[in-house]
Image 1 (cartoon, rainbow, N blue to C red):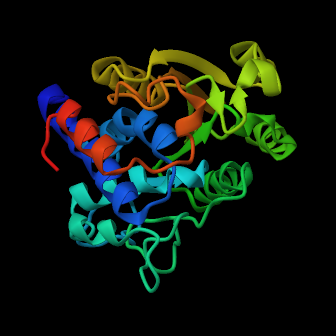
Image 2: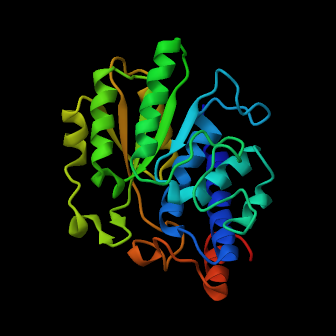
Length: 273
């Protein structure tokens, strides 16, 4: 059973880590990192079978951050889960730091795939799930995409393959915040109807409030019972969630807050600078 308070606390900590790290770096992607915080908290503090003491445990579930620019959210989740000292991620984007602007699987414990080029993480997750099927593993592969990311053709090739091979060990989650670097998805390149598109590709499709921990947990549990097809959970989110001046603002896709903004953001998130 999920302990909602614990997961909410993890999500709040993740959000504060995101702001602190990006502010210290002077660059990064706060908007899409903040929108994904509740999803990552639910995965790492409720759903996924992982072991920080043994990151390569054979029976582990795997997570791929296909929207690799949201790396601060992943670093915070891994750090809070115990894969490393979370304070280390405050070296984000600094010369010599392993915590680069996009995740590196060879340098950071718990990172399953180096991602950044949109769509490739999703494709890799499909490959991981297929390998898991061939090896007879019972574990799951989870992958998080951005909604602007599904404008990439490689996403739909992977989606077609996942359905063809009946990868019911694959659960994709779409961080559907409606915005991308150049503005609203609707203005840049229409992505709707998302539900019908994935359904027509042979996926089991679900929808959830991406900031409702209990609903996310419920949908992730439901995904365990789906057989013969991959699962897509469309999580409706708010870009910049938790910070008033960042919420639903495309301008905060890839911009660091200044000192005053950082102080306000941390105060709103319940912490101190």
